[in-house]
Each structure stands twice: as structure tokens, then as C-alpha cells.
Image (tube, rainbow, N blue to C red; front, side):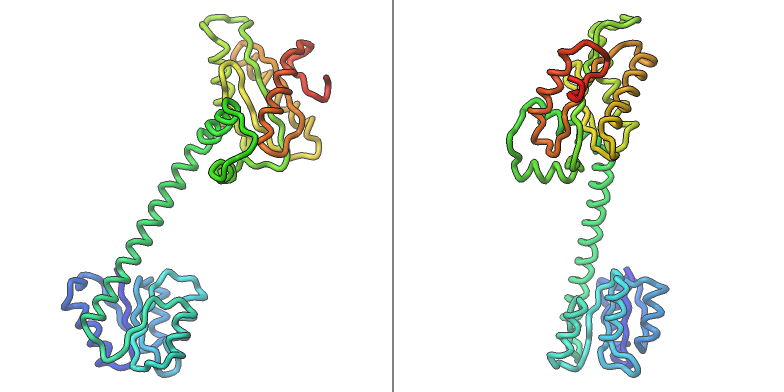
Length: 299
């Protein structure tokens, strides 16, 4: 960890450096500057983690340096060390998020206690950022699975209203489109190569896996031999958009899975809490056998 010490008084600067070098923190890198201009150059080139700075210095004071750091959104903890105890300086320090404020003459115990607190704060922040990265990576890698499980739960256990936790989960997964179709794909047992027992379940698994992998923004799950698809509306012609997807799934199933499917398309929905109603419409569509694709617009 890098610690930058700034003071125009050489004795004060040497005192801070000696306190650190004679402490348990002596292994940290210590940088020094005698004015705010040199300190700013070091900040930009060395990226220190902690700054101990005097306030009253020639040309540019410590508050001005802190303002630059704040406006540049640098991750640097700033601690002021000053012989001036006027409240106005403390106010300015707080305005630009100074970490702490120490008064001269320095007490080594107080100084080291403040340094330890700053180091702990940085380490805690680093640990939090690591956790966020791990969770973000996990969420990204498993988002399609989490969406699948959420939709599956709603279909198996329909609810008329969401709990706060379900609403939060729904929003975090991006399952809140303004308009969408719920599409049901029923995988049939009749096929040209009936080589697997319960082949319709293999077809539904394969279709759901392909949809979640190849169609960005579309979520799906399978329950038994039915694949359910939540398809957000992204065009001015939603019916054509839904039928285009349905047609591509029919072709894929015939050509790659050597089977057939029946597809039902619900009316437009605007809340996934409408799933029970929309699912009933899909089951109604399945009762028609006129073609591979039956939507409410046709029946």
C-alpha cells in the first residue's frame, strides 16, 4: 500500500515519515511532497492509497488538493494534518469527503491509530469489490438458469400478486418487459426417428437449451414436454415477431431433432403476474390441430 505525506515544513514531513518507519506499517511504500503541486503529480503517476496532507501551504492549500481528488473521483483516502483548528477547515474537509482530520503537534499513537483505520477501510472496500465481482460473474454465468427457475416456479405455483422479494428478483433478472408474449411449445411424440423412450422430454430440454443460448433477451424453461418462452416485444409488429420465432423453432425441430412441435401464442401481456391467465390461453391453443402454429389472433 502506498502512503503519500505532504507538508511544506520539512520537520513535520520527517516526523510523519519517522512515525511510520518505526511502526508495524514500515513495510508500506512512503512517498513525500513539500507542496500541493508536487503532490498532485505524484497522485497521478503513483496512485497512492492514503494521503496525509497539511492544509496551509504556499501557492495551493490542502483543501484545493482534496477538491481536485474529489472531482477526479480518485480512490484515495485523505487525512488532513494541520495546526489550525478552525471549524471552517474541518467543514471544507468534510465537504470533499476527507477521511479524517488530525491536529498538530502530532501524537504518534493517534497518528498510527488513524493510519490503521484508513488501511482497514481500504482493505474492507477491496474485499467488498472482490465479492461484487464474484457475485456479478456468478450472476452473469447463471442468469439464464436463474430466469428459467423463476419462470418455472411461477408456472408451477401461480400467484396473483408478488411479494417484495419476488418483485426485487424479477427486476434484477430483467423479467419486467413492458409487453411480451408467453409462448408454449408442445413437443410431440410422433417423429421419423423414434429411437428414444420419452423422446418428447428430450426435445423440450434441447429446445429450451437452444433458446436460452441463441436468443438474447428471451427466457425459457421446460415443464414436462412443454417449453415456455417469455418473449419481450421489440418491434412494431409483435405478431410477426412471435410467428417468426415460432417458425424458426418448427424448422429447427424438424431438421435437427427429427420431430414435430405444436406452438401456442398467448395474447400480449404486460406483467408476468398474468402467467396463469396466459398459460390457459396457450393450453387453449394446443387444442387446435389445424397447423403447427396457432395463436389467439387466429382462433
